[in-house]
Image 1 (cartoon, rainbow, N blue to C red):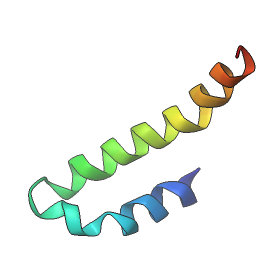
Image 2: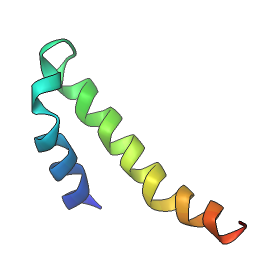
Image 3: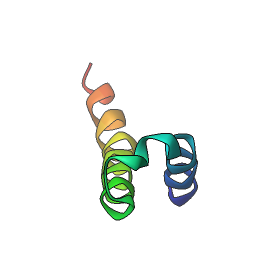
Image 4: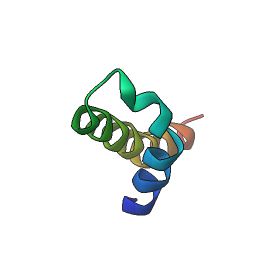
Length: 46
């Protein structure tokens, strides 16, 4: 999951000019965690 966060951070470096880097990385990490754990859980019930 850490690797996925780094990949997403690298892919969105151009968006960091308007928001602080720390906030952006935290947000990406939070959404990556949600994608990793919640999406498969929800797919199980569909």
